Image (cartoon, rainbow, N blue to C red; front, top):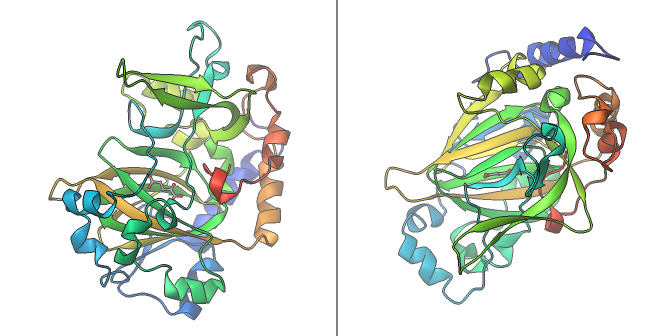
Amino acid sequence: MKSGGGRIIEKLWEEVRELSLGSDDTRINRLDSPPTPLQFLRDYVSQNKPCIISNAISHWPALSRWPHLPYLSRSLSTSLVSLHLTPNGRADSIVPLPDHNKDDDLSSSLCFASAHQNDCFRTEYSGLAADCDPDVPWATEALGCSPDAVNLWIGNHLSETSFHKDHYENLYAVVSGEKHFLLLPPTDVHRMYIRPYPAAQYSYSHETGEFSLEVEQPTRFVPWSSVDPFPSPETREAEMDKFPLYFRGPKPFQCTIKAGEVLYLPSMWFHHVRQSPGDDGCCTIAVNYWYDMQFDIKCAYFNFLQSIPYGSLPPETRPEGSPSQTDVSEMSEQEPDEQNGDQ
Ligand SMILES: O=C(O)CCC(=O)C(=O)O
């Protein structure tokens, strides 16, 4: 249902592509070597535009060491580390609420199973720190600060991260395997159908070998994208009807980041991530550096855009007691240690 901006919002998506990003959905700029800090700031950060950089981490010992799992186990043998165990590889996703009646309205019978990125590479996984650089030097110089958080991502072919955005400039370095990103600029916010979902966590029973989903008490609502860009063939039609702005709008930008490459993922870009193992069959491993973003005029424009009602479901389909769409656009940011993406 269109209200407020009407076609004008769709014109915005087109114009952003025409003026800044290009219309080829697969075309993200590629650099053969790291940019100078000035080039990075001028051509990418200040334009809020992604790029892929080769030969920026070729000197990291991690590239040759980490594909060998015995090396990882040895290096971490004395560390206490936390893992996100899930039944299906989706550590942060919208899933049916436990014990909910199947006949209930679908949008009020879902919850958000959340995961956390908490600077784990510099804390729990510091046994591996010597294998990488502590920061991305040209980004540190360009942005004028050190990373706020450095996270380690280890997963297999099932691991998937649902659409979300972060309030950070993200330098995402792949060490082993390949990562497949779908990217949408912040101007496409209405295509994400962000709604408040009750937060939940998986818990695993060693006795039964089964997972259960526990909704946080007291209930905490997390604004999250409702769109699964890869629905099963059986649900595809229905998903396309529910989320037409996503499925019938411009295609998201797609890219694959291979071992040894770095993606610059600008702040507030929506991203969905899947992965595949390398030729050696090892899991996919990446390290990402989160740098503080500037809360500048772009943020003000974004907040204004998000506050315009467009393409969202009517309020009566919201879970009982959840915040309104206006409240969602005003929900506050999270700190890195409670970070599971900001919407
Ligand atoms: O690697 C992933 O699965 C997700 C990465 C991500 O969401 C991020 O770096 O912000």
